[in-house]
Structures are given as C-alpha cells and as structure tokens.
Length: 255
Length: 268
Image (cartoon, rainbow over all chains, first blue to last red):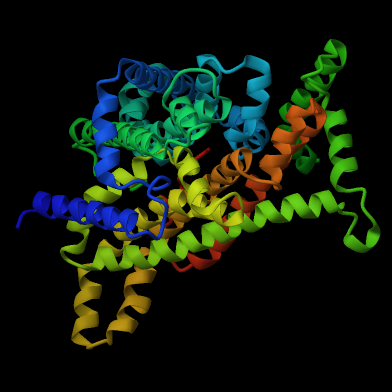
C-alpha cells in the first residue's frame, strides 16, 4: 500500500465518520450537514460566478498583501540585521508593536477605512510583516563570520557582500518567514472580510451564508474552498523552498 | 554614565515617537486618534480605579480580562496536551501518519475564523465555543512540530535505549520527549500568539464579555480612547505572555547545547 493510497483512505475514513455523525441525530443535520450535501454545494459553488468573484477577491488581496509585506520586511530586516545601532534604537518600538494581535485593529480599521479591500490588505500586511522581518534579522546573525571576512578580504564592498554573501545565506530563513506570513496573511484577509462584512471575498460569503438563513451547508462548502486555497498556497511555497534551496542544509520548520 | 547611555540608546527613538504622537494628536484633535496621555488616562479610569482590597482593579477589568485570559490559557493548554500526545503517537508510529497526513495538511490550512459560525451553531455563544475555536486553530503548529521533533531522535539514543531494554513508558518520557522539546517549544510559541488572535476574533463575533467584545462595544459607542486602550492592553498582554513562555523555555532547555531553532518568531 503506497503513501498516497493510505492518505486517501484516511480522508475517506474522515468523511465517513462525518457523514455518520451528521446523520446520527446527535446534531441537527441542518446545523451540521453531512459531507454528501456539503460536497454537492461545493461543486455548485465552483460554477457560481459570484462566488468565484469572491474567491478571486480574497486571493488577490492575499497576494497583494504578501507582496507588500515582502517588499517592506526583507529590506527592513537586512537594514536592521546589518546595522546594529538602528536595531538597538528601534527595538523598543518593535517589541511594542509586534505583540498587538492585528485582529484587534479590525474595529479601528473599519471606522477609519471602511470595509473595502484596503482594510484587509493593510491588516494582513501588518500581521505578515513580522515573521519575515524577524527571520531576516535572525538569518543575518547566523551567517558564518568567516564568509563575511573572506568577502571583505577579497575587497568586496558592503553592497556586494550583501548581495553575494549575506542574501543567499539568509534566503532559507527568509523563505521560512514568508511561508509563515503567507498563512497569517490568509487568516487576516478572511477574518477581516468576515468581521467587517459588506465587501466581497470568501469571508463575507461565509458571513452572508451564516447570518439570516443560517445556511451551514454553504458555510462549510466555503470553508472547504478556503482550506483548499490555504493548502495550495502551502504546497506551492514548500515546493519553491525545496526546489530553489535544495543546496541549503537547514531543515524546514513545520509551521 | 554608561548605563544611562545604553538606556537612552534603547529608548530614545521610542520616547521621541510617543512624544511626536502626543503632539500631532493634540494639534489635530481628530476624534478617531486620541493622544497617548488620553489613552492612558482612560485605561487608568477604566481598569485601575477600583477599591484597594481588589488591588485597585475595577470589576470591568477583572470581568473582561479574566474571562479573556482564562479562554486563552485553557485553549492553549488543551491544544498543547492534545498536540503533544497526538504528535508523539503519530511521529513514533510507522504508518499512522500516512493515513492522517493529507487530512491534517488540509485542516491546518483552513483559516479558522470562517469556522466560527459553525462552532456557534454547534456549541452556542459562550466560552466553550471560544475555547473550541482556539484549540482547533492552535493545535496544528504544536502537533506538527511535535511530530517533527519526535522523529528526529538520534539513532545512537534509540540503539542505546534498546540495548538497555528501557520500558516503553520510560523510553517516551525519558528519551523521545526530551529530544523533541526544542521543536515543541517552537510550536508552543507560535500557538500562543495565535491563540491570542483567535481569542479576539471569537470574542468580536460571539461573546458577551472579554477584551474583544469590549473593543467592539467601545467602537459602536464611538468611545475611541477606550478602544485604543483595549488595543494597547492586548499588545501588553501579548508581550507579557511571550516573555513568560521564553523564561520557561530557557529553564526547560538549559541543558540543551544550542537553541538555534528556538528563536523563530511569529506575529499575528
């Protein structure tokens, strides 16, 4: 029996358990519909243009947010990681800003920016910047000083050392940070849509389905779509990590 | 002299930023942006103006804060117990992981806030719903890190334990788990900040008390200084919890030669 076959068997077993649980009468099947119903809805949703627009809106917001976070956090991390005085001076501010759970800013953001796409992108960026930033700083600390000294003794300037020695060495850590940020950003995009409502996106779709009619079949179908999106993002980044950085010996963090 | 210099270097920028913030907000007089002094005054009035016998905490502070903290603590501890136990089981068994691997990869990829409505109809509004939401979302980092850690036990240790015929229970608690602790702690830390996030989300949606509920309430009342105070409080809370865990981690891992992998940080 191969691994894939075992995995499929596991999934099938889970679906059977779920089906049995929903139909057992322990819960109201309307509140917790069985997978046969949910999967039918799922297939229907994939042919529904307005749902697809929601899906695209979420994925697009996620991609923009991750792009902005990388553009902010990697240069900032390189700066903070290589210039000690700036790092010391800004530590207090960073230590103060970082632990604020970004979802706590949702009420504020709703008042300030409304429920348009800017809100979710801003919040997702706020949350996604930290893992990349810290991993980049951390990576620069880990670089073997002998390599830096070697580069220097060959007469490399600061910029050249940065791009030929420091950056390639930091890349595995930075990618780990990006992977963490990718899932955090997705959580933030969907939660903001869900809490702010009104706009478009997977989160607002789930909100609309759950309030009013209480269509739990639609909620669960939307959840499955969200899970698949998250799964594909994870897998894609993992492949990039394995392929692009096959030379690095650093083991990946399972987050 | 040297000490004050070091202190200044660390805090100067912070102090300047706060002063600037104070100045700008005072000049602008924007209703959405109260000044830091106003926020602090509100926080003081709201939470720390109680009678001395209750340590100057008001009933509002004890009610909301304790409710929220209790949920985070219970959810996180439950997730830790489930994650480590299941992770050890899956990591040490040869085929079990193959069966549940794809399922777990999918489950952890679900952005858990969308499951809040499902948990609300199943469990109703209240602490049990919030704790379930927290457990469901934060168990994955712990579980996956435990599996990883448990699998990375040194072959020499495995052989040594076998040749001494160490009983199974002792083998798990004495060899496998200690070898996995650095990884487990990395997972615990990610989960801690995540549980704070989920606590706020679940309270924003379905709750009658707690910091998240209070935030939403203040926003609807247009009481912006109170809302800002809530945000600052959550930041302080996140910082304190993370620092506490770091202290525990240093103690627990003091025997480890290096803690290279323990320095991963995640925001939320």
